[in-house]
Length: 201
Image (cartoon, rainbow, N blue to C red; front, top):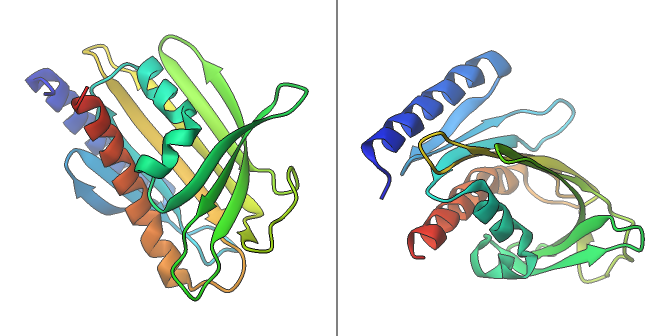
């Protein structure tokens, strides 16, 4: 359980993010269970970006390890059918992910190039679409534009503040309403699943 001090820290961080959102065009779309999801429009796109924020009762290193366990994604990351880590000869990393899309639309697949900047106080993982890294599969629509960032910040009182931002172009003929609903649901479900994972340990 999060202590009273951590709860106050979480409350402060949520209100701080909400204040920042007013300055940067973000709008609060969801606020529950110590989690806030904000969205904003992206110029030239029909699909919104999200910024999700919460506090997890675990160290940044432990949260980072969970995020690096790509094969575990189908068990907790919403709508993920398959996920695997790719490593090139030069040591660069990427994640290959297949995402379920409601019939009759085609499922999507994506290759996300991954870079990590790790320090004791802050871990930053940046992901960008790298669509030509592996050949396309005719069963799926390849996501060709995406970018995002995970920021894991150590709190003085213990625990980790997560800030997760992301935007993608799903490609193909997909209704903006469907995609924008997932912009809220995906970070909500993923971060709640992360919280539950560490609470159950």
